[in-house]
Structure formats: C-alpha cells, structure tokens
Image (cartoon, rainbow, N blue to C red; front, side, top):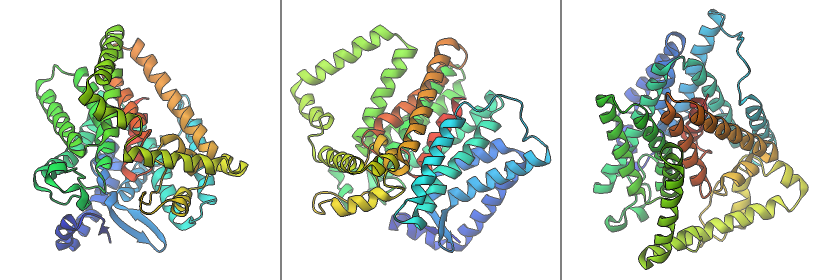
Length: 431
C-alpha cells in the first residue's frame, strides 16, 4: 500500500480517502499494464499524466518504490509481453542512435551504485533515475508510429503540466499547501505546487512551455487545438512567474532566443539579444536587479559557488575521485560533512548539471551524458535545417532541452523521478 509525501494540507485530504485511493491506484496500475499489452501508446500517455505520482511511496522489504515506478514497470511489462507474443522483438532497423551513450550512462550509474556510501538508498535511486526511465524510453520510442501517436503523448504531457500549473496558481492567491513557511508571505509568496520547492515547479514546467511553444507554431491552423495549447501555455507561464525561480526564467529566455534564431531570423535575433543585454546593463533598476543574480553575488549565488568549490575540491583530491566521483548519494554525505549549518541547507546534489552527473556517475557517466546531448543537438539542428514538416515541433523539442541545460547550470534538472522521465521524453521525441 502507498503513503503520501505531500504538504500536510494535501496529505490530510489524501489520508481521509487512504483505502479507496489505494484501491484506485491498484486498478490504475492494472489498467496501464493492460493498455501496455493492447494499446501501448495510451499506456505511455497515462504514465506521463501520472508523473507527479512519484510522491505516492511504498516499499518492498528494504527497497523503496513509488507509484510512478509501478506505472513504468506495468507499462513496460505489458508492452514486452505483447512484443514476445507477437514476435516483434527482432528488428531489422538500424541500432538506436543513442545506444552507446545510454550504455555509458547506465554503466557509470551502476559504478556509482557499487561505490555509494549508502548502498540501499542508492539502489532505490539507481533504478528510479536510470533503469526505469530508460525502460520508459524503450517503449516511448517504439510506440510513436505516426504524428497521431506523437500528439497523444504531447497532450498527455500538457495534461500533467496543467494539474501542476492550476495548483500553483491557486497557491499564489490562497497560500494553500506551500511547502515551506518562508514562501507563504503574501507579498513575497513563491508557489511549490505538489513539490518541495518553487524551483521544482520551474524544472517541471519549463521544458513543457518550450515544447508547447514549438508545437503551437507547428500546427497553429487547428483552431480548437491551438486554443487548448495556448491555455496550457498561459497557465504554465503564470505558474512559473509565481515561482520566482530565476533559473527557470533564464532557461526560458535562452529557449526563446534559440526559437527565434532558428525559427525567425538569425541576424535580427542576435541584434535584439544584444540590445536587450545593453539595456539591462545601462538602466540602473534593471542592472541592480539582474547583475547580482547572473554574477552570483546574491545569497543563492554564493551558495552555488560554495557547492561548486566543494565539488571540485573533492574531485581533484584523488585520482579515484576524479575518475569515479563520489557514487550515488555520495555528494550528500560529503556536503553534510563540509557545509556550514547556519549558511547552507543540506543538499543531495551540487546544483550544476556537469558536477551532478560527474559526482553521481563518475567520468563514464559524464562522458555518456555529454555524448548523448551532443548527438541530440547535432541531430535536432540538422533536422531543423532540412525538414519543413513539423519543423517548429522539432525546434520545440530542441528548446525544451535548452531549458533543461540552462536551468541545470544552477540546479538539478535530472535527479528526480519525474524530471528523469521528462528528460528521456525529450530524447525520445528527437528520434
């Protein structure tokens, strides 16, 4: 049976229907397994809608798992059974373009599990952040047979984002179920939706905003669909605005610049970007607001610099550290030993995408993720230059990854159940 890891106001509501809700979850998992066998594209779509259900938690003996993981396993099991029965496992198409980078990343994660200082907890994260999302990717890329299948999965992501956006907007005006008291003050309120921080909302909604922007431009002639996409976009943008997450804002600005550069006019985009930068530097109110953030002079920026310094000092202290990192959850132990309790909160990761992967998965995993991203961007830019149909959708996928990477310079855009799957959704859409 599952228990719920939410703010107490949400949790009390869920606890009041604990037994029927658990029965419903069992039925849903069974339904996803059935759909995985009969209509796998809908099983994948249902799993995407349920991404936030990683906050429904349980365990089998010492091994924790979430309802989202249950959905992924049910989906994959149903699909695999159908593939075996229908003898579809033998394929004649070329090997998947990301095969070797994925093998390297999974190999690095496995090494990180073996050397982890907390093997049991690390095993739960190893399966939730690497094994199961890659199983999800396998089914995801196999079920997209045509544009209709792709639309089904995009709508599923929009529905999932919509639930997060609506709760976040409701929180802005009511203060309901915001994760920490420090964010509840009406004048400086920051929304958290289902999650534990405002940044988590931005990390979840930012890529979807970029993706939907490209999709909207790609198929704008369908009036009814355009209205629905616009509604999802506007609500997600409002939610991100209410997070006051500078990392998300910066990621979306970078995505807008990339979208304009490839989708509008390269020279004009560069010119407009330079003008905006100059205005920001010249106008005193803007300069006073923006410069401390982008130069890491504010409190959050100083904490980020401390995290980077701690990470680099550990990696360069010994060749084995440089090669293997600290193992899964290893940075958490390191940070706990070195942080100043009055200045820095306990953190699981160094809040930089390079150091996140390096410390958790070693150089092997880091090379894997860099190789994968290089292929992703090379492939996407090549398709944008040569493909006319769905060009803006391809650009939307590209800019979604831009949001992930730019926000990832100061945060953790992968090492969370929903975000790991979201990352592989973008990879799968690039095939």
